[in-house]
Length: 130
Image (cartoon, rainbow, N blue to C red; front, side, top):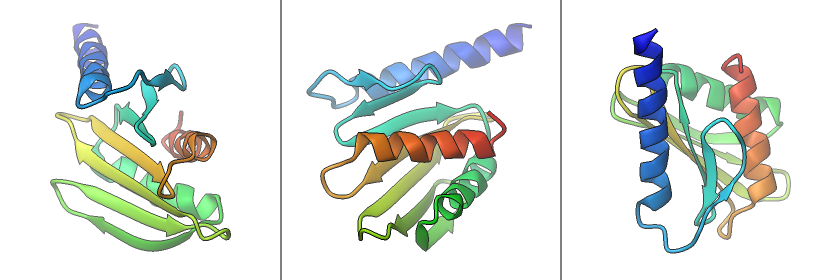
């Protein structure tokens, strides 16, 4: 199906843009689902719309027993902020990337935490049915 091929191409192109945009160091690939950990943040692209990814992100915070302290969304972007029992803050920033695609940036604490970012991303994917 050519629509699926174009969607996969757009996903790969968006990921490449995330990898090379302002990155001064080589990112580590953290999964096969178009996720990259770079500059203390996990960057990913979901093939779902902003509203679905936002709802999955809020649910992921609750599923992981993180205290959601802020959640805002409009048609241009969304953000979910939470706090762990250890006091570390989690920030998820979402932006639409065209028809049915959303970019995610997940940051944990002030210096980043790759394993925790990956766990949050895995929970978001699970909530999206992946």
